[in-house]
Image (cartoon, rainbow over all chains, first blue to last red):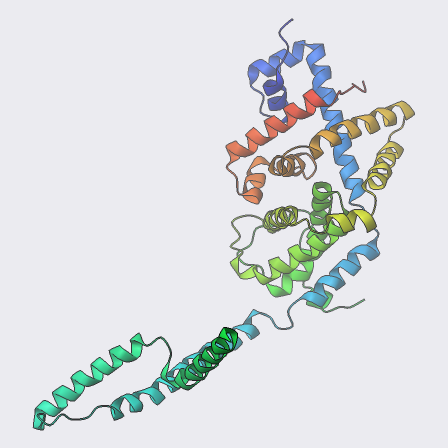
Length: 165
Length: 201
């Protein structure tokens, strides 16, 4: 038989995916069988070599397990989750505390206008409070950090003056 | 010797491929390491050709598995899941080869490893001629395999060294089964064309 198996067909045979015609050809063609056997032998050599490369004494595996154990986190997941929750709750509490501190200072700025009186005072003060909150949220710097910002700006200006000289 | 890791040991499971389970429990971790460390190390060794790196990445593989054990759903076997982690680590390692110079300078000579392996293969053969041919074939095929693109190389090694099924390789690499087959066909074609193989029969 002159038409021997091509690469694709030989690969299919190696991957045990050969169809009936490839199988029939292999049954009759000694050359293709030899070719297939040659590749199989080479692949077996690679496998044997790779397995040999991975061989290590028992002590190596023991040391590897020890190294892994040494690097394992001290606590398991069940122990670390409450810690994560505690950290999250602390953050929420901190934010809440900052807000509580900020709200009275906003309220202190609400001054009843001369025209406002009675029920309308409450409505106006609500409106002013909302406006103040809007201003507060639009601030570049939180109120608590304003002094620090002013100091930083002053230092920056001073540095600029020095460099101008 | 009892260690923090071994003290977590529970009833041993069947050897070989670890069965698929839903979730990897911390108390099973020691057994998982024992059953898979040799296979993961060997795979990384064959992929990277560096014993020290393979050792480091094997450890990293199990540490990552431990950290992410909650995400293991049991869709694939644990060994396949670990292989996937190992492949990702090897890919990361390839991307960051800043230590190549130092590993070449101080690391073990790859040629020595390969030579020792060929001798080990040769020792197992009854005939000197067969051993010689096996050694030649190994060298020829290995040279071709080392030049394969990384993903193709990983697929080739998983198939012909780890003897994984196409489906398992697809799960380990995240590729479609058709893509895995395509990689294998191309790799085999390269091996056949570039390595001048001689029949031992």
